[in-house]
Length: 227
Figure (spheres, rainbow, N blue to C red):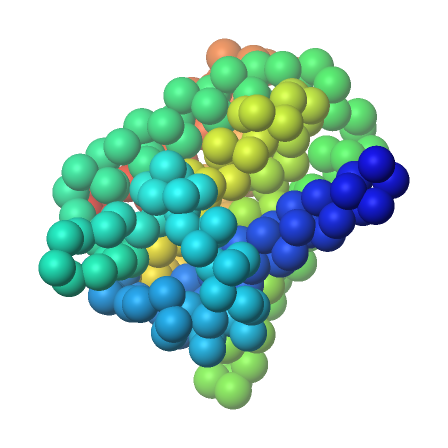
């Protein structure tokens, strides 16, 4: 029984690693939205055995990250108006509820650390005179942006919500990469949106925090739509 249990754990771990490899290639743009890909190509790309890839595919289909089209094969999720609408609506519903609880649970120290991270990005963005430094600034700003939202949702301590939010985040990031990836010219507006949320959090004003967060997500949705 112990051997069976150990083998089962190894299988789960392998599938999880294969999943992370797939999403990693998706977010690094090795895989493109709308691209067709075979199981064998996924084996070559991820380095995981065919068995692990076959077991991975139902999860990717259930999460909407790929779809199987008869006679054509597997297609990476396409970025279209439907995906944008659904992904940002899901994000808004989850984060509005999450921040109402985060405002009560986040310590002053946690909020101060988040603010320092944002102030650092803003300071670098305002003094970004060397084009060679922009790629690192963009990456750090993107990470600060994602970490803030993840922290709000993870404060719920609900793995079902967090896991589904992470899947939706992959879709949001696909949308950003295709249509509105965080670039140097919008770092300051995005960080300023976050600072409005942080100001409300510091005041422990739940209504204002929800309003500021909703405005920020709407700005992101409009950028994704090209406005």
